[in-house]
Image 1 (cartoon, rainbow, N blue to C red):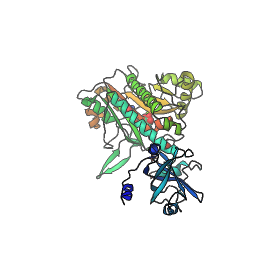
Image 2: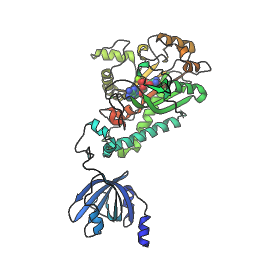
Image 3: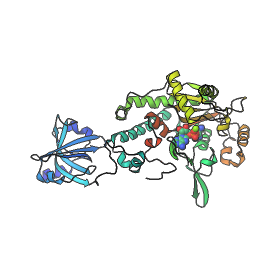
Image 4: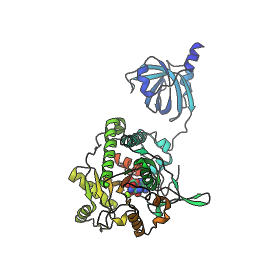
Length: 446
Ligand code: 4AD
Ligand code: MG
């Protein structure tokens, strides 16, 4: 009886701790990754969040009750097992578990709708339909473990650099980027919109006296884009900083952020990088080249990609530029500066004496835009005139216009897409792989 009670109170240990528990009786729990029945001996490969556990059932060493209890075991079932840890040179971890008790907590249906071993590759859309199962594939789960670490590094970077984390409303009465991209929702009978950027609020909080703010949060875009780089809901990393001299300082912050993230990924995430086949492939940027749009367009034209002075960069142009800077500067990154006023929002500051340019930039990583930033126009009269030029009336944007009337420093900021950062970091073909449960014009489930 005493012995029984002792067994009942066993605390669960994980796969990583098993090696330190040789000759002890322990409790483990997890999913059945594999099951083999060789008649006189049965093997269960159990998986928990830390790794794998080999459970061995020699018919002569375990009770008949335990041996028979797994007769019809299915893969992915959840088990709780008490047993003795034995050293075993043949086992992957150097130890195996000889069970004295097996409880089938939940029996899984067989077969599963997708193969998680990686042997049979399903279409991405099917994998996404069964995303929680897809994550049982080591490659998928390591991608999201890495994403979690990247997010942590972003927070560390901003907190170490004097930025204050903020959380701003995602239910708003209007947007500032452009009307076409707004999702409209019914707010107690009144129209409201899902925030397409924290732009207004981050500028407001710089003016509040916080000076340097950052936000990591959902961003909604009602864009019917069916591409491998657009989502309708993504995670934005936004920051804004006051008392700057120019947009160059905003770029310095982005450069510091990317350096910090990638340095820490390289130093601390070896397990994930190996699982994703990326261990030899992380470039930590030091100084990112900065190229003026005029110069970029000249190069593009020389290489058959002609754009007008008013054009935005096309995806093909970004791709070409990515290859060019890799060859020319041995850099995966490039800042393109001075975007045409025609393709930028009204709040981007214009350079002195240049009414067609903006003090703005994009960051291109391996041929894809991952960030857009700028110095903002903080002088009320100029801002009002710029709004008018874009067909907007600043007086009608009451909350936005107010913040420029009670003491506003020169300021600038930037927005980066976390999902795009993960797409590029992991060399994925599709942004949907980088996000747990993507939202696009066709997908609203699961
Ligand atoms: O370039 P965007 O639209 O810029 C802004 O939102 C500005 N308010 C930022 C600023 O501070 N000036 O978005 C910023 C970044 C893009 O560079 C891209 O990485 C990501 O957000 N992004 C998207 N990611 C996935 N799907 C989409 N539809 C995205 N749209 C933008
Ligand atoms: Mg952009």
